[in-house]
Length: 617
Image 1 (cartoon, rainbow, N blue to C red):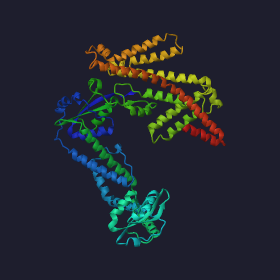
Image 2: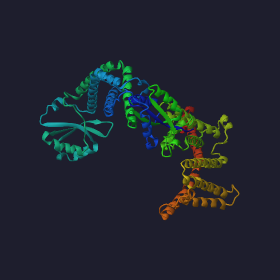
Image 3: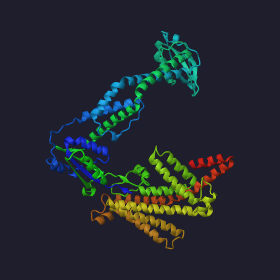
Image 4: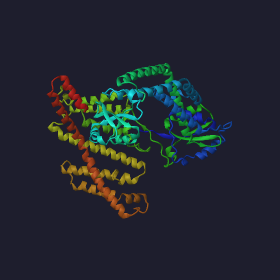
């Protein structure tokens, strides 16, 4: 339940073993390349120190990385094209390509192209023909007039075009028919729309004029082959025959290919994975520091992975040096990547944290706090055993498709079930004996004696949540050595005491705490003054001058507005938690509505369906 401890790995190896070492690191999936502020890593010193210590023993074999990249990307394109045509899903499978070289992959791809290339191209061509004929058959199905295409296609001076017109645009033609240099006939209709099928005859010399007219009427052309012969029914029958022949031919070709489909899928996957691995290695090579005989790689690793990585590298060569340094040893300029580390209970909520941005390496991981508060708030607002069960089962249903969302749904469902027992509610029914007897809130949230306690509980919960939030914010600011935000900012100590002052003022007004109301008000005013003067106070603590940098007038105006914003945001944050209790009341009221609807219909099954649907909605 924290942020994973990271170390900066510095790996020195000989350039002739560069590719093998990088391949092993990529396959391990345990390194993160990050070269921000790399001048602090001391790479030049490391490289010169080990240049003589790790002689390559043979001449360095230079590789043309640009050419390799071009070859790999070309191979990936060809594999994706084959997979697309054969409807195969490509996946990167790293555990099968360690001993599968780039040369082998390219040779296998060439063999596949030679063996299946003609068949695949034939399948592609025949599928295009099938698509064209199916479109033509669909267009012909709209016709309700018999047309002899043999006569139409033999016309020399008159051309024709078939298309669709909306009924509104048809009226435009009808009103201006005497001004149109073409003959327009309705020959069919599209039942699913407000459009009809028309055939337009025009002289060849008036083709451009006719097309301009049709374009102004949103004319939609229907493709009709020029080689059609005889009537519409005959054409449809001929098309059916052609489709049957083409589909049989495609089936035969596919059978030849798919007899070894599992082998083909495996081979394409291995080729694809190998090429992707090569591209990843080339990407890492761009971040290497190279000397005459050695290279230096910097990468962040989890502290617990160091021994495993050294074991992998030592299995390749004994000519290497590895060292790992803590981020604290590299200075404040270096910031390791953030890798969240949570147990099974909180891990699904990492998805939500990532949506808002990962915390910095030295900050507190907010995932556990988010998970707990999210589940508690959801349970308080939507506490019902039946609804919770619906959410839980929904999470189970999508477990394989969306694992992260599934985990969240299951936990929210469990929380809803738990608070359902607290409220004594199952699908909105609060009179089930077994559940009613163990309920802590007797009669449900809408029972008159329970309404105010539920609303007050929401506010108390909000105060507790905001207190923890302030604590996390203050600790994070101290870790960043941001004194201004930690002590004098609206999210720091001053902001928290202003918030407590506001709560105490409200409690004084309702007579809960027996202290003069002026005390919390003075605390609030004092904290506001501190927040307005946060910059000079910070500089005073740090002993730096001037106390206010820049224009003083602008500073005070800006601070004044920030003070007003603090008052408003604190008020809204405090009051907003009333909605937690209000949602619980609203939820119970909505259930009552569905309960009434269920009682209005006959049949126990129908009643149950209404209650379940009410919970889902």
